[in-house]
Image: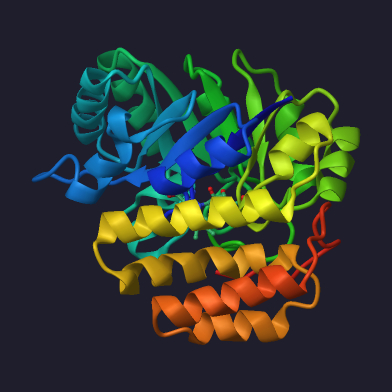
Length: 324
Ligand SMILES: Cc1cc2nc3c(=O)[nH]c(=O)nc-3n(C[C@H](O)[C@H](O)[C@H](O)COP(=O)(O)O)c2cc1C
C-alpha cells in the first residue's frame, strides 16, 4: 500500500510536511494545499514559498492546482515544471462556498461536459504527469459514474477519489458503497481512496473491504496522529518524546516564517483541533491551549498536556472531528 498525505490548507504546508518527514517518515507522497491562480497572478507569495523546492525536504511532493481554466492551469504547471516538478494535481474536490460559486473544485462536478473540456485542453497542452483529486458529485452522487467515465478516457497518472459530494462537506461517513461501484469500472491508472481513514481500525476495515486498492490518502488521521502512517507500515508506535520534538519544530518553523507569535499560535491551535485526540483525558488541556494568548502561556499548556496525559497509540476509536 502507498500512503499519501492529503493536502490541508492552513495545516500541511512545507513547515508541517518537513517536520512530519523528519520525525515520522513513511509517507510515500505529499501534496501541497491548493494553488489558486487567477488572470493576474500565478503564484501568491505564500504559495511560492510553500512550493519552492529548496523549502521542501520530502521525497515526493506534488503541487495541487485549483482552477477551471485550462490556460491558468497550463501557465501554473509551466512555472512548477521550471521549478523541477514532474507531476501536478488538479483539485476537483474543494467544497468551500467561495470556490464552488466560481465553478471550481467540486463546483465543476455539476457540469461533466465542462470537466471533459477542461481535461481535454489540459492534456493537449501540458507536458507533465497529471493526477486528479475528485469528489463524487456536487449536490448528489447521481453523476459519479458519468464523471468516472470521463476521467478514464484521459491518461491521468492517478485518480484520487473522496467519496462525498460537495454538499456533504466533511460531514458523516464517506460513501464507500459508491466508491465500490466506482472501482467496478476499469481504469488505465491507479485509483486512490481518501476519506475518514482516521484510525488503525478504519484503515484495517478499509483494506478488508477493498483489498485491491494500492494507495490511500490520509488527512485528518495523520494530523491527529502524526505517527499513523509509520505505525501502519512498520508497527512502530508513536512516542511522546518524538511527538514533542515534532511539535516544537513545527512551532519554531511557524515563528520563523511569520516573524511573530500570534500567527504561529493560530496555526498551532488549528493543528491541536485534531492532535489533541491523541491524548488521554484532554478536555481541560485543550481549553488552556485554545485560550493561550502568548507563547509562554501556550508552552505551559502544551508542556502540562505532555507531562500529565498519555498517548493513545492506535488513535481513539472514534472522535468528533470539526464538521467543516
Ligand atoms: C482544513 C482542511 C483543509 C483542506 N484543504 C484542502 C486542499 O487544499 N486541497 C484538497 O484537495 N483538499 C483539501 N482538504 C480535504 C482533504 O485533503 C481531505 O480530502 C479530507 O480531509 C478528507 O480526508 P481525511 O478524512 O483523511 O481527512 C482540506 C480539508 C480540511 C479539513
